[in-house]
Structures are given as C-alpha cells and as structure tokens.
Length: 121
Image 1 (cartoon, one colour):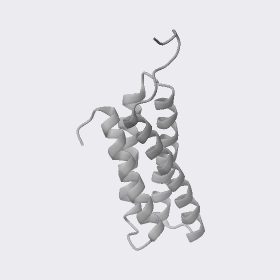
Image 2 (cartoon, rainbow, N blue to C red; image 1 turned 45 degrees about the vertical axis):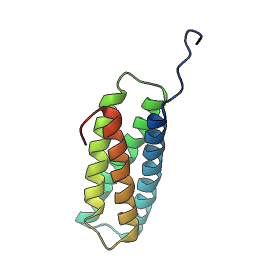
Image 3 (cartoon, rainbow, N blue to C red; image 1 turned 180 degrees about the horizontal axis):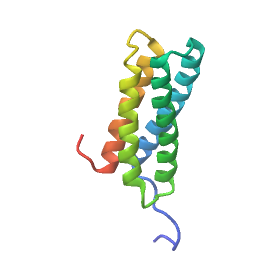
Image 4 (spheres, rainbow, N blue to C red; image 1 turned 90 degrees about the vertical axis):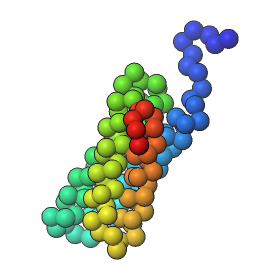
C-alpha cells in the first residue's frame, strides 16, 4: 500500500512519451544550432520559430508529465501540435539531413503526445 503523498510509478506509455519529448527537445536544439550556422533567410527564420516553440514545449511537456500535473493532457495536445508544425517547417528543406532527422523526431513525439492527450491520431 502506498503511503499518502507518494505517486504511483509512471506508466510505460508515459515514460516513453517523456523520452520522446526529451529526444525531440535535444534534436530541435541541435537543429537550431545547425540552422544558425547556415545563415538567415526568411525560410530559416520561420524554421527557427518552429524549432524554438517545439524545443520549449517538449521540455515543459516532459516536466509536467513527470510531476503528474493536472494540466498534462492539455499540454500534451499542445506539444503534439507544436511538434507537427516543426516537422512541417523542417520538411521545407527536405535535402538537409539534419532537418529530416528533426522532422522524424518531431513526428514521433507528436504521435506519443497525442496518445497521452487521449486525442485521435
């Protein structure tokens, strides 16, 4: 029996979602660095905004899941949306391998977050 104040262990699904969020966060950070090195046209600025939104929301989403925030489902839904937008932005440069890896990571995270939010895929 659990003592009062202790939380149950995270489900496997939640743990995988936290891991996907953190992997996506890291990939977006790396992609931002790569994009900054390329220089900055209008397309790159749009990608940077999407990357910044995604990197922040994935970190916050993982934090909220780990502490079982009552706002977790809503944050997972918003995180999924940000990840999808970031994947689309990254695919505007389909010949860049870093952008392709980032888009893949974002899509995986979006799928996991949609599942955690209870939204239809």
